[in-house]
Image (tube, rainbow, N blue to C red; front, side, top):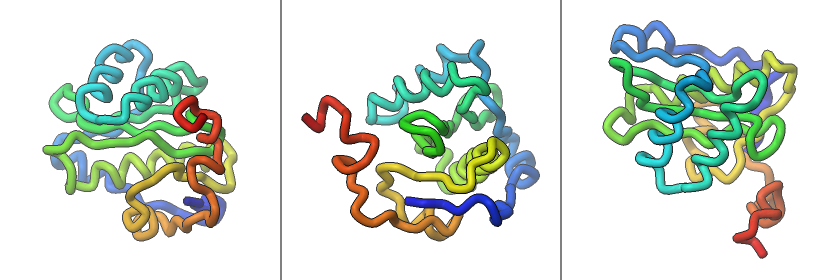
Length: 157
């Protein structure tokens, strides 16, 4: 999916989430172990651990985390599978439906925009309706994983 960044202002829910004790912030390499453990324990896509680790070594770090009561409850990465790509991302199951995923998406897209990107790519998404509604993302026709940057994966041999 493609998201136009250059003429968009994405509305943050920062204040709303703060009333629930939820903070979204750029990850720190010092928290690497906790972040990777969170991703591994809460999401089935095991490649997300590797992608998140890569994001933690980017400069600047290209991983944001959602925290409540000193516990990680969500994450979002960018510039991992390819430059300008959003993802992986996820929110702990018992915290979904509160706007955390939306805020992670918006803050990540704003980071891409601040870095000078005109567009962001949401690769390999199963949540097209969410992205269409939230950030006006559009499907990139004829871009299945085997025809994208993911075509080089061992699993596609």
